Structures are given as C-alpha cells and as structure tokens.
Image 1 (cartoon, rainbow, N blue to C red):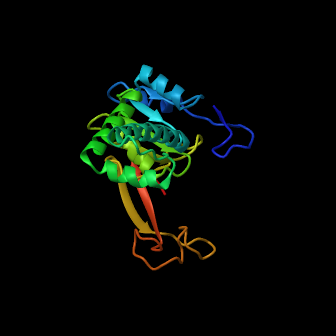
Image 2 (tube, rainbow, N blue to C red):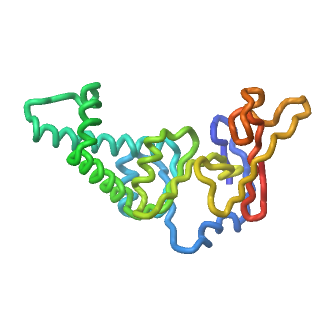
Image 3 (cartoon, rainbow, N blue to C red):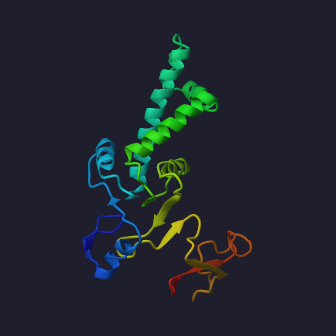
Length: 228
C-alpha cells in the first residue's frame, strides 16, 4: 500500500506489509465490524453507522470531536425545550455565557441529569448501539470527547483507545491504562553520544523514575517483542 504520511505534503511512499498482518484482527474470537469515514459529514456517518452497526470504529480526533459537537447540539436543544416548558417567558441564546451557567446548574438536577442520560443513550444508538471498541489519534483528543467516546460503547465495554502511530508503523503507543497482555518496565534513560539524556525531559527536574525530569525510559513487551 502507499501513504503520504501523517502530515501529508509529500510523495506517496510504498509500504511493505504481510498478508498475515492484515488477518490478525480477523483471527480474534467473536465477529467484529470495523468502520471508518471515507467522506461526508457527521449526518452521513451516523446514517451509515445506524445501518452497519459496527463493533469497532477508528476515527481521527477531528471525527470524534465533530460527533461530540453533534451530541452537544442535540443536548442543548433538548435542554432549551425543557427550560422553555418550565419558564416560557425566558429566552436565552444557546451561545451566551448565561446559557452555559444555567445549563450547568440544570444538568445537576434530577430532571436535567435525566435529559443528559437520555441523549447519551440516543447517541449510542445513533452509532449503531453495538460499539465495543473505539479508537482515535492523529492529534490531541480533548478529555470531554474521550468521555463521550466511552459513553457510546455498549454496556459493560470500556475500551477507548487513544493511539499514536502511522501507516508505516501503526499502533506504536497508546495513552491510558496498559493492556493486560503487555509487560511494562521503567529503566533509567541511556546516555547519548553527545553526553545528553535520551529522553525529552532531560534536565527539566530531579524527579524519580516515572516522574517528569527523572530521566526514565519505558519498555514494553507484548508477545515476546520489545521496544523503547
């Protein structure tokens, strides 16, 4: 296959992969349906997800941020309707600071909390209602978006992958809790030829191993292979 790289702007590069590498996920127990967006907006993505009912969705941070904003828009509309039913004479624009303060207080009530739960369940169904694993990457994903991703998973599932990698070397690392089948070991960072530390936080502090400035490197071993 060919890739222009994560940042783009360069000529496509040939990438050699094995047939076995493409069949790994298909060998896992249970059937999985992966789904990524080839184009179109959020509405089209949701329409396809409802039809296909995927169990796995991989999308860039921009996709999940768009889906989160779509959810927030639906939530704001529902909150606005509920507040108008109770106070018909009050009309506050959704994009105003007052609206943010009022909705924050309203969501803390039983009625407002019920609306939030209902909309999160609706978002889960809009994405097919069968998601077991969701993954993102490409850029920083805001914490509120990651929480939304966790809410759209099936009941009992909690697999949100915030990954870093590239087409040439996919899945090099993930943010969050270490997987059960991965062994993690912290070691002192080796000296470089220039006399500096190998880690990016050299000289930034005097913390211990595992802390910022501690000069540590984490090594993982998954299935017998290791890397730094």
